[in-house]
Image (cartoon, rainbow, N blue to C red; front, top):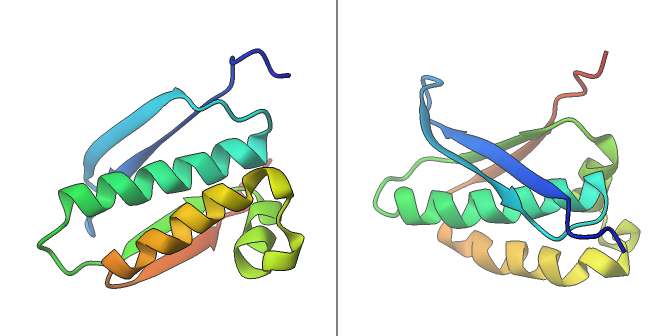
Length: 107
């Protein structure tokens, strides 16, 4: 058990890089990868609510290559996050386009 102390957060930016929304909070995830997946789901929901009438792509950037593999290959996804991935994938039909970018900016 992680004790509920884990959280996730992010920013939604427009095509010029201006921040249109911040989000953060406890997510109940117990690992870094799970927190990233939860942040992706939260970003998707917020993006759909904010950009409902605007046809722009959602571009999600994150720093974990393991999460990138989970997004590409279903067979690599841990059982603990399968429902979360199903929620993400089920909501993608609302979007014009979505792109996932692993930044690998670790120092």
